[in-house]
Image (cartoon, rainbow, N blue to C red; front, side):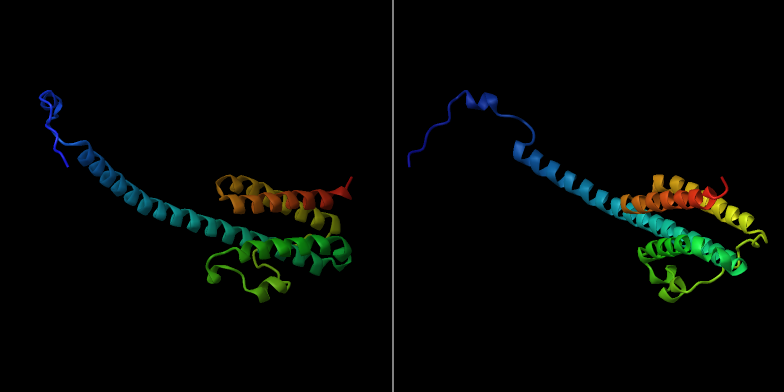
Length: 183
């Protein structure tokens, strides 16, 4: 192969300093380091979000368990309300199970046996002796819990936010159904 002489003007274009390939290699290494450090930071942020979501789920399952205890207490005090309250109680039980099933740690979730059996909550307030007052108290508890869940969904991850929104809407519907007979 013939060798071609370098033109004399080529030396005037020669740059002093690093070549383009060196700069690109250095930039790639720097970008890689930034990405790696970003991954480790986002990993811990992801863990924090997952932990916060688990706490939110556990709290929602506990709240549903407490509401279920209220239903059980009212039904024990006023068995004649079973026809009206049983369908709503069954929904609350499903809500508790839905929240508990999504928990990452089995120790934080309710056991299937406790989710299946009716149990009264020790923190449930005393049941009024008047049926209408007892139902009104249930409606108030449903309404308050629906409001808290509506507020909590703003900070929840997508899937949990949808579940919270759905259960909050169901709670609001329960409150309406419980107070509908008062009108």
